[in-house]
Length: 169
Image (cartoon, rainbow, N blue to C red; front, side, top):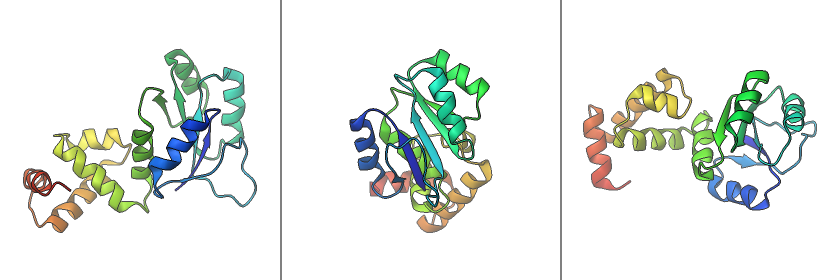
């Protein structure tokens, strides 16, 4: 998955690259994409930006999946209601969680997706809750769980959670 991160905060961009560890390809802090660069997702740090500037950025990348990071619920609500944005992350959420979320959405990252689903299963989340948490179709969660059960040679989620807990994977 190729992600364009637009943020004024250098440390924020650096941490995003550090946590992605190859699972998510982060381009640079450019606000436009040159022809030939295939971008799947645009992540815009909405903090310290005026609403009109955000609408311009969103319009510029309207053919991509767009997510915002914002500390203002009012701004997020306004942008969400007037623009085609897939979701808004609260600025307090850890960058690692954003990377995990985006990685889970990438069909080429089955191992990461299955690990996140297994971790959520161990936490006691239902299939619907896992689906909502990672913005995945319920059928994908069920398919991944079926793969996990097969790989672990177990029959159900309880056995998978117990085995995963014992192995410390």
